[in-house]
Image (cartoon, rainbow, N blue to C red; front, side, top):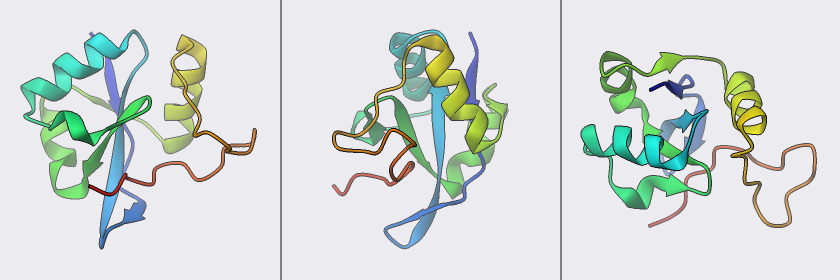
Amino acid sequence: MTVYVDPPTWPGHGRLWSHLVSDVSYDELHAFASRLDVPRRAFDRDHYDLPAHRYADAVRAGALEVSSREVVRLLRGAGLRRPKRGARAAGGQPGQPRSS
């Protein structure tokens, strides 16, 4: 099982966020997030939005640290990338957490 996390550099809702992704399957990603007690509502199309204070928890649990560009490359390579509806082909606004 390999899950990846990028640095918490994405602003939203008064904090910084990371993205937690799998390059294998959404099932793998959901299982990893569940072990971290990350709520399912944090899942956004193809990744989990993870607040900065949970970044170290993800790494301790086995997530590999990668760049934000690498997150997108991994998702595309695995065929798991789901761009936002209406997003530009170049990427739109990645990493914006959904409002709850």
